[in-house]
Length: 173
Length: 173
Image 1: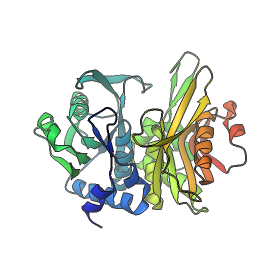
Image 2: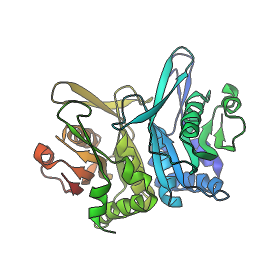
Image 3: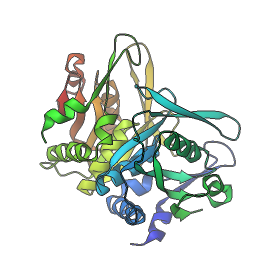
């Protein structure tokens, strides 16, 4: 198996969630056990060079990849959620999307000062969500050792918002 | 390590999301790598007796546990989401909560006829969400071989909605 299979299994859905957008649907990749294994093992290769204390997954598809990597690498898992989903004391970060603003939250005790953190999400688009996550983790005193995506939409230039960090994506569109 | 540690690490948050509710917060369990390993390994024991083709996780905390189990057991992973989150053709199921109704959706091709399915979520409360998931999987022709939860709130009697299925929860409140 090679990374071509990952790209070939991503389903492109036209005009979703709105006209003119091609949505990259990862569910067919997850549904095939062998391809899912391969995806996670490929993502884990990126992590081998780093010592990681905790992996952070972003609500909600990011949870899928981050949790498996945390289990495989025997690290802790922390989650970043959309506003209003976390029950305990949170730290929050607002960020702007093209025509709206969103707020992400994390429990204030989810990252300890000095912990070595890997950030994981399924998709890098404009980078706004990941940048907000970076800001939260830095406020909590975490050290970001890398940022890992399954898919990157190159033309949206999300990397420009994440300059200075080690970034990897497995599949580009 | 034993299952007492799992219960002891769950954080009880009073009056969330509304007055009079004690919310059981699993994030401290996930954040400790060793305890997270133990949780998943304990959940996986329940799966050993069954032949499983696919594991289904429910939006959003269910994704965390279902995805790791799917990876560990080398099965496919499918997801059930709240209305409006899935891009492709879906099948949906409405269900009622105490004072409202919700709709769950799944891609219509996420479960194939005759597949042996394990359903996973973090919490069994009234059972409404899981019952809606059962209904969707049955409509798609899947065979449900078991239903697995981390936590069960016994006094809400969720099991009564799920009669006839093999159900396991690791921790009870």
